[in-house]
Length: 270
Figure (cartoon, rainbow, N blue to C red):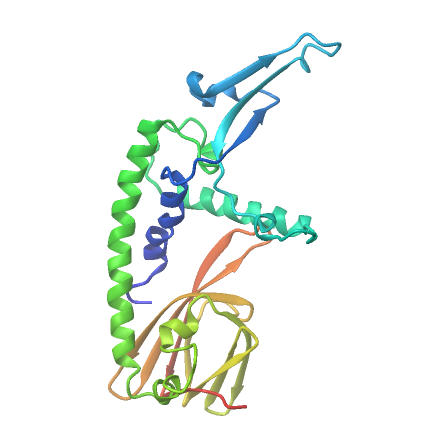
């Protein structure tokens, strides 16, 4: 990638943190402390309940903080009578929480100096002044990254005009450009046949690179998700640059490059 690099991706990913930290929801959920750690919450936000029931001293006291409800779970989309998939809900939480921690790790220490616990920050909690400082930094980085993205997409749109796939888009109901075609697509299959390369996306659309050459593949691209693309017209060929993502065994996102040179690009009719 020339413009939409791994470093650029760190800045565009700040969008998730911006949504989390902005006051865009009034729905709250309790976060309970059962074994210390209460000092990471401002006193005015900490609620402590003491009872005098026939319980142990430990069980007669509980402290909690109300957090903004910013985690999206499958259960929120289920209709009446639909069965909750517990594993899916667990993974929904883990993916969002772990990737927020990853994004927080990209913020300089001087911006995070007043954060008492980054785990709570990943759940949406921070004191108001701290939120303001973090948002001021990440908004600026995100806006610049978004401007680069829009310019890069515009250049890719122009580069595809003489490719066979561009004419095919005119007859397609839903797909209208190479960037749109690859946007968040899952690469499910790759085949090489002489000078042609076949990439199957989401098990439904197969893209044919005619006269193809693999310039770079940092990792096996099968079962990866395409996050961003750059398309360039060269003097004697075209180049498609992909920024792809795979999750590790802990469901954390990692980004890799894949670059292909080719003479033409089309959607397979097979």
